[in-house]
Structures are given as C-alpha cells and as structure tokens.
Image (tube, rainbow, N blue to C red):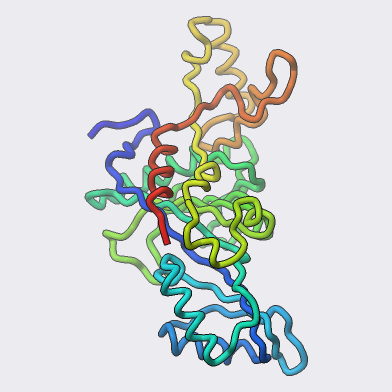
Length: 305
C-alpha cells in the first residue's frame, strides 16, 4: 500500500460527513416542565432527548426549551421537521425553531477495518489540524484531566481525544479515534478516525445558520475552511539547497520544539514574519495538506439534509 509523507494513505479510507448533534430552541405558547416536554418527544421519537428549560420560573416551568437531536433526526431535515410538527399538536410552537449550536463531523473509516491504520490516520488528523483556537490539549480518561500541549516535549497520543478551543467559544474542534457512541462500544467495523467542529453563537450567524429551516438547503462545503490541515515543509525544500539556511531551519525548529508530533500550533512562534516584518497568518514552515483538504471538502459537499 502506498504511503504519504504523513505515514498513512487517505486512499485506504472512505470519508463521510454528518451532523453529530444539533441544538434547537423552541418556544411554546403554554408553559411546562422540561420532563413533560421530554416525555412527549420520547413518545414521538422513541428516544429520550436532552431537554433544557431556558426561562425557568416558579414551579420549574417555562416556555423556551433547548432540544438536542442526534443521529438520524440530526441528519434528516424532513424527519426532524415532522417530529416538531407532531410535538406542536400537544404543545403549539410560538415561533420558528432556532439553532443555537451544531457539531459537524468528518469520519475516516478504513476500507478493510485495519485498526493500526485507523489509529495512524487519527494521529495524522491530530498532527495536521490547523485551527485558530486556544488551549490545545488532550483529555485523559484515566486521570480525568487535560494534558496541555504547550511545553517542549509534549506529544500527541492518538488514543486520546485532541481538543482545541473552549466549551463557550464560537468554534471548537476535536479529533479522536471513535470507538463508542452514547457510551456504548461500537462494532469494530464502525471504528473510525473522526474530526469535528462545533459552531455556536456568532459562528452560526457568520455562516448563515440561524433558523432550523436554514439547514434544509445549506451547502455544507461552506464549512471547509473550518477543517484546515497543514503539514511541515521539509527543511531541505524550505532551504532550497542553501546548507547554512538548512542548518538554521533545523536549529530553529528544535529550539521551539516545532513538530507535528506536538501539533501544528507548535509552529506558531517561528516563520511568522515576512521581509517587511509583518506577521504572517501562517508559519513559512508549514504548507497545506491537499490530500486531507480534498477528502474533507468532498465529504462536506456530499452532506445534505
């Protein structure tokens, strides 16, 4: 099997996109408690959905509720719309349902189910993801603590969830080896490498996702810019045959521990100044990973609701 410079070939994987979950806010004419709203939705969907009262009053009642949809309902606009129409028979809805958060994922599933190759692709996605977020870290389920990747010697572990951004940020990213769903172990043939981005608040307005109806004809490849992948430029290529420059590049990278093994953010402190001393958006030491970019763009283009 042919390998890329990054160690694992994208051609060995089928790449698909989906909505992992979707938060929708509805307003009802008559007040109720969240568990009653939840029970009506369970009767319609056969599933217990997460429901939160946003305007809780005396007696724990309210008229504004945030609902979280997963799986089929999150990926089928017509089924989701019918669910809310059926719900409105019991609780008439006062205004158009609004979206308050959405998580979009791209999955890389190995064509023959190879676990080592899938783990390698997880590491490739983690080490190549380039996102304008903060607090690059991995969550360790054993210690229940975050391992931050901001010191020399820190290294990515594909067995752990890689996260960029905070919970309340407009954008946040995750890359991990997906083996479970709803805390249940998936069959091995469904294990895959996953990269996902969460949009909320101003991020939704930026992309024109405000009302639930906006999703019906939304072109998800508009989100391609949120799935950016970079790789390090080979020192020899960057030096262009200049041995003194090659030595300087290697020393500079070693000095700052700039390496994909720690993540693309490790290159932020080098190669950011141009000849006019202005700050570049990206380090000269990294370049686009067109193979990953193309795979994700195609998957997002195929995603329709």
